[in-house]
Image (cartoon, rainbow, N blue to C red; front, top):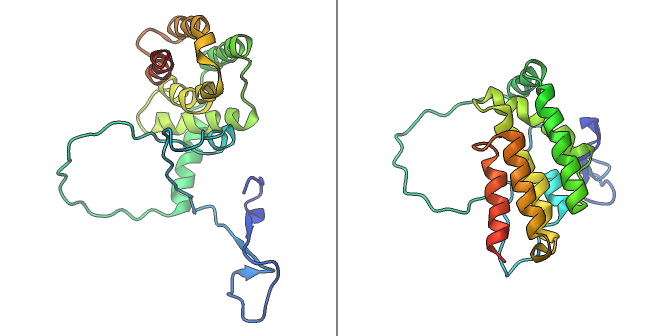
Length: 202
């Protein structure tokens, strides 16, 4: 599923082919089309194991950590949208709404700070996700700093959960100051809230 060519996205269902196999089961494998998205849920509490970096690196995480009032929304007509149409919207955003040089430079500075203070880095996979995600986030009505905040909070700072936080209080406070100075006092709210939640756990 991580191969660059979608024609290589195959899952082995059975070890070999048999007479009468389903049409799209070839040599025991089935091709996963690009319009298939895998969605799952995971509890995050003292009854479960820590979610690994490998999951955070590959998944888009949505946290549901607050209860809201019931929404009595009126019935709406369904919208049919082909994968090709949606994919073209993504590509159009990525081609026309490039991340600014300033934001990329600020990301580099943040990366250097986190690496120096916490010995945590992120690789090309997350960097590519950032470049793919932020233009789409902007096209959907957001701004690039908000999009970067979402990715940093969900992809990079989550790695802090494996650290010995009581010994890193000063470093986390320094990081909070660095974020405010670099991205603005009222920006990077998700990252700020996450770091502050770590300090509250001590």
